[in-house]
View 1 (spheres, one colour):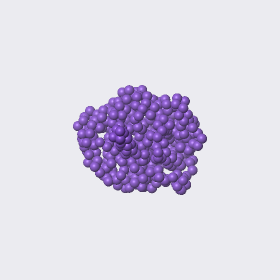
View 2 (tube, helix red, strand yellow; view 1 turned 90 degrees about the horizontal axis):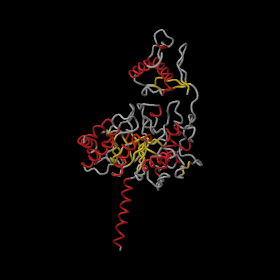
View 3 (cartoon, one colour; view 1 turned 60 degrees about the vertical axis):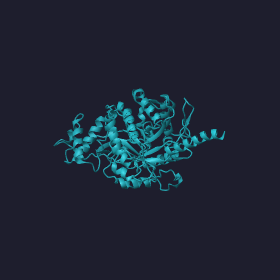
View 4 (cartoon, one colour; view 1 turned 135 degrees about the horizontal axis):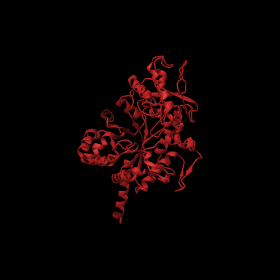
Amino acid sequence: MMGFGFVPIFSLALLVSISSAEISNKVGINYGQLGNNLPSPSESVELIKSLKAKRVKIYDANPHILKSLKDTDIQVSIMVPNELIQNISKSQSLSDHWVKTNVVPYYSDVKIRYLLVGNEILTNPDTGTWFNLVPAMRRIKASLKTHNIKKIKVGTPSALNVLESSFPPSNGTFRSDISGPIIKPMLQFLDRTKSFFFIDVYPYFAWADNHQNINLDYALFKAKNLTYTDPGTNLTYTNLLDQMLDAVAFAMKRLGYPDIRIFIAETGWPNDGDIDQIGANIYNSATFNRNVIKKLTTKPAIGTPARPGWVIPSIIFALYNENQKPGPGTERHFGLLYPNGTKIYEIDLSGDTPLSEYKKPLPAPTNNEPYKGKIWCMVAKGVNETAVGDALSYACSQGNKTCDAIQPGKECYKPVSLFWHASYAFSSYWAQFKKGGGTCSFNGLATMTPKDPSFGHCKFPGTSL
């Protein structure tokens, strides 16, 4: 009788120990490199340690970074670049070669535990990669097996727009264009290999897009008495992140996979942004990141209303403010650190620091309400002059009389300055095209200002928000 009872108890203990070893609740950091003023990989790894991060995700397999992570206790996630997916999906030998070159030389000394195939492949319109994604994941997994590498999970990070419905959470549904042909076989692969559904989940963007209806404190984990009850399940939510995660869980369940674990590949809150980007400030960023770390590292695990007690592995975005990231200003302001390595605010990714011990006061937020007034689009400081010249030419080639005022002899021609001419062109372009989706970005060359740059008889076109 003793022998009969011993085996299942032992097996259960073994299963629990394996699971806990695989699924740590420690929080990591995304180490992006889209900046021309960032510390070296070796300096960056020391900074990652100082943040007490137990995981790091990089967006390639940079050998300098991997060498710098040698003999650390940091779990590492590396990535197959988007542009290689199509070829790898069709060639096992190319997949084997990629793993042999980018994984095998480091695996014995670097704790590579996750290999992500591409980044947010299903977010943008298909360029021929969508249907190659899962085959490429299968190839990479086979290559790891060929090299007898068993500790690396293969996956791919998705943005939340893989869902066509996320509210209420119980209505979570994958987009119809990808649900059957791509997501279902992906879930089958993740289930078979005991991997994770990696999701980039940003309550900031959900709140900013619908701030009239979503309470900011609810997005920041600060809502004391504010809850939302899902009418389909009667589950009660106390924060926006849980709603978003459970929408993914219900979407997977809808396709027949209720038990695949979720891994937060990116989350965070911007510490700054453009004038028209509401709520992007240091106070909100610190509040969100501190609170999300507290939630995710609590033991025993809190989980979500639909998955109580589940550990949710997670990686905060991002290590640095990266000055060469394209898009709106928030894209360049998700860092926990300035490029010189100093902390933007006190933060401890281990979760060991109680919230009450963060003593340094945070600057009061000034942009939690939409900006009202005119703004102009100007050339940003310190950008490449050649690129500005190209952007000036582009802006002037668009629209109706966009650059008439900066032609020789016209009211804005002088001073003859690339900065002033391009700034006028950017403002004029944006004034014409904002309503149709035009932005004040110009690949990171432009910035918004509430200060009217007009002078003398030269009037810069402004835009009202």
